[in-house]
Image (cartoon, rainbow, N blue to C red):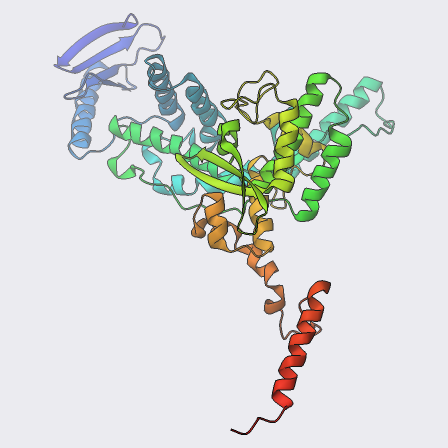
Length: 475
């Protein structure tokens, strides 16, 4: 080290020195850790060499004591440790072990979330309770405002008031007077209030855990601070579209959103997205299954009553299955796609781009624009709706119509447990007549009988009445 002056070796692995890059005459000591190539440098805070020697020996004894009992010997803040961790991940990316995109995500999480939470806290003081309390802290600040230009953290009431005062002061200064501001009614920027998802919190906590455990492996944090597993997070109900919202969505798409396209390409994409939404809401496919769907996977069949059905052989999450849908609607939507598709070859993707290639994003930006345009982007729980909401819409409507959980689970390629866990709230609505039975002012209605069946029902009732009133014939 070029800045080292007046160096003195007290013993192998223990050195005292002054720093030539500083004006102070205080001494420093450098201690080499046993069985390692790392050093710990300590400021002794004394210009006296005799005192410096004594302090250096004392610090070396303390470090040996800490190492013997597996205690940390470094005392750095989380932010510094995280910086080293990111540097190591960049080296891994250069070796091809991970992608540079993942490194950027890690950097973003550390900068925007983890450093504000524990960045200034010494790494050896961050115990398990801080990690377990992260979801609560994250949700308390994670609620934000989504604009068309990106995410903005929600201001506290004090911050909003301060920002308003600053804006008013600048406006007055610009006008050259401070008595009265002209009334203004600027068009507000379109905003949406969102809630951070459990998936986002889990991803951030995995990075948090990796940094802490990496510090432990380097003896910068005590072993008993090691983090294992993942805390159980409160499950958030996945927002679907109600039947009324679904009708409003496809009506808006057909009559306003699609015709409003300004270019030929934009019109093509909007036509495709419109059919895509209809198919997803009427099949319950996963986005990954829709992405993998090829024209060879679309076939026609008939059910036991001779009704035509469309059969889709889908692949996703490492599994394959067949799902069925009415040809009267899904078959019609697929025919519309065939009419505008660049290619309908057997190996061509059903949901393609305007150039005929596989649409990897599944029209993500177009769907967001459609939902924004229809004012249906934000669900009741404040979570932004996206492509996966169409699958939840299908499940909710099917359960409301009385489809059994077992059959629906087979159709959607999931388990009955998952159906019950995510859509159990549908049963309350479906069986409202039973739930409300006996309450005051609640009059249960008799089940409605189709007109063509009324006559048959009346005949059966008359026959039963006749059997019960006629005397039995003697034997």
